[in-house]
Image 1 (cartoon, rainbow, N blue to C red):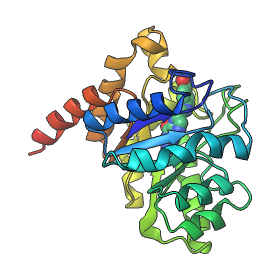
Image 2 (image 1 turned 90 degrees about the vertical axis):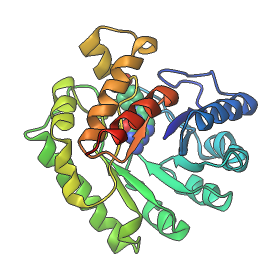
Image 3 (image 1 turned 135 degrees about the vertical axis):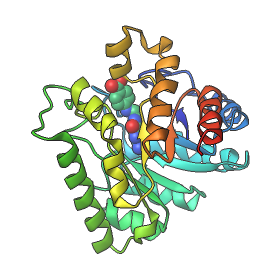
Image 4 (image 1 turned 180 degrees about the vertical axis):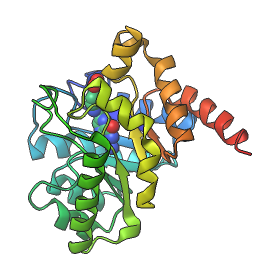
Length: 256
Ligand code: PT1
């Protein structure tokens, strides 16, 4: 899954892909480099990010859906807003990616109406404040319990079980040790019997480990992508598609 941020304030490539043409050509490169899915995000959810209006998010994201689909990939929409989900689905989106796991008012109903696959992600707190002193007694157990509760909420809302994928939400209300514990115990999430999506690309946890700035984290990002693949992740959300795809080919070639 290649990341396409159309936000003015993304953590690693903010403002670079603001213009629709730049966004489209970046998507085109990622598809050429092996991305099966392009994840379009119009609201930055990185630590400290501010919120955007419905109209603004729709205006950033929706016009890109058709041209990006025409590249021959699937289009995922990184949103929590029901109105964006419905408009994006109408425009041909293939998947919903919600870092708030359909917890906003109306989101479960909207997702159900679209009949689209949906990724449920764990977050503790809200983007603006989630990194100020997140706390867990048992991070794996708590993230698992939350995802279980959201899967049940989806079932009760009439969302088919086979449309759901899950994501522990690296960097979302988690300190380094929490993120590392989740990565070390990633196989625990296989017990859901659902596709596991992970996003680790260029995140601050990699900076904390390597001492590198956000633009210098590619090697660290592909390293954790490989670990995630080995531990059962099926969808890897990344900036560096070509490099991650090489790693994926090596991984697949060395499976038995
Ligand atoms: C993710 C994800 C996402 N991450 C899914 N969607 C982001 N399903 C956006 C940092 O610590 O992991 N899974 N959509 C980006 N969010 C962050 C969070 C970016 C933390 C950076 C950090 O640097």
